[in-house]
Length: 173
Image (cartoon, rainbow, N blue to C red; front, side, top):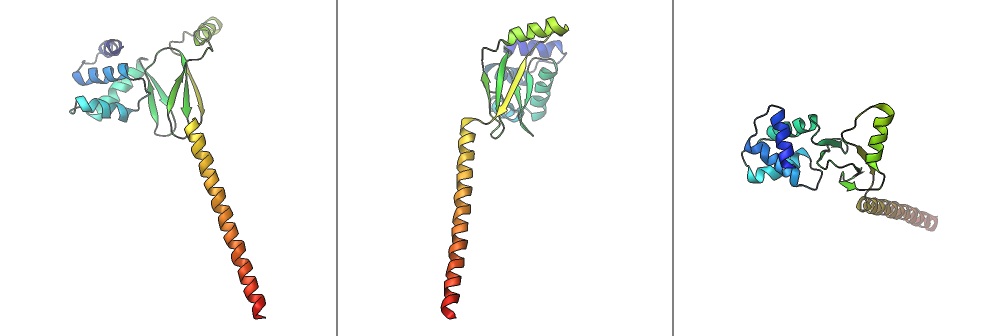
């Protein structure tokens, strides 16, 4: 896969530098949906001289040429899809994690149907499902539980404080 990315850069007329090769190799070997920062941090471990601009420009060129797909997972959470096979991306709206789901929804058949119906030749199919991962669902339940316990404790303190005030006033009369 790294060779395909490198060839894509070469066809775009870019010099194939060791830094660009390192970005391509990282993309080819990752099973994650990395952000620009994650690519930069990982590549920098072996190429400390690489700049963020080189990573950013390489990713944008690969995206513009259709070699990778940009996935928006909310504000300031742009990730890159490196798996060219048709699949579904499941995106958590809270932690912004992205997982691949290889489901039997027959994306290849959908792409064929799109072509037959419209003449549009799809090169990739990107299906995104947004929601909340199990960990974030649990964290949200715990937050709600803490808020409910906190408000009920504050309510009890308010009521018990009021009762004590009333009792003290009654005794003074």
